[in-house]
Figure 1: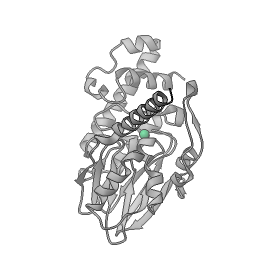
Figure 2 (figure 1 turned 30 degrees about the vertical axis):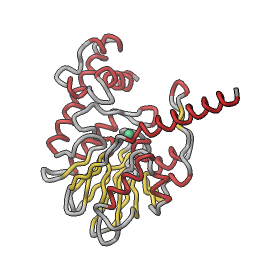
Figure 3 (figure 1 turned 180 degrees about the vertical axis):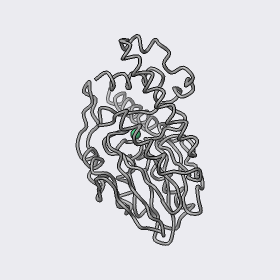
Length: 295
Ligand SMILES: [Zn+2]
């Protein structure tokens, strides 16, 4: 009996370990050079930007905690220094999951005020789904309200907050000397966006953030989206047109008196079928827009 129990416990332990390894063990971190000293790293979760130089290494977003070692190894290939500053574009776990690991390795975390607020408290969503507070080491030590400048590696790094866009704590990171913009999840390249209304996001704020990015960028700007491949201004304009078209179609459906069910059945994503193949499908984008504009 005792042996059976032991074997059972052992089996459970092995299965649990395998499961947690399986989550990220297949993930490879790829590095793409964007400019002389800016790189985009991809693995699982949000896109990472790395700025290297004489002063040290600055990083934007850090994906999931189990990937930190692999990400650190990838950074070692492009820089002699470990991460000095770590910027978060917003609080979601696929962008901040590695915060604790990088902080423990010496990084100072910088983000919007609301990123610290959300990481340091339990966040409750409808139907009781909660995200627990992160350990204190994961909380940003330096926070800002509307904007912030970091002068580092001969680069003027401009952090710009966007009000109520993807969440309530979004920031663009604009490397103004190199003309590289990291947009966080205010840009899902060629995909419908996730607009996290439970956490302070809104379609109007989201569209405003994208308009702001259009003002900041020119045809030479390299744009790092929160998710998807390295992008250009043309990609950003396509994204903006999709957002405006979807917004107007859903608003018209509401003005025509359609119910949510009728709106969902009305093929409002016509022409944008390929945009619904990611995290947010055709139904989800109509639902979030309908919910927001019906209010
Ligand atoms: Zn996000």
